[in-house]
Image: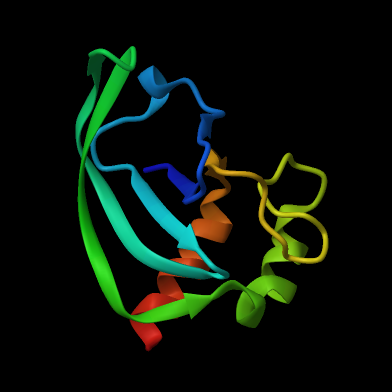
Length: 114
């Protein structure tokens, strides 16, 4: 399973090749400093008008995860890898980005703990 994060913004770019995203992969939705939903890919990318689309089943979180609460731990996991987060925990511009398994698991741990 792979993890991704999508930043809700007026413009959206996609960093990963959608064809690499598989059924069962997880997508976190980030908005205004928090993770607001967790999505599971239920259908791989397929041709559409976009030129590709994914089918994702989202679960909107009652208790949102504030990234600043866990960013110190995330920063240790990020190392030199490309990341959608700046060193201060600020997000990149709108878009879909891959994140490491360790970061994805940390976010899931926080969601399940709350």
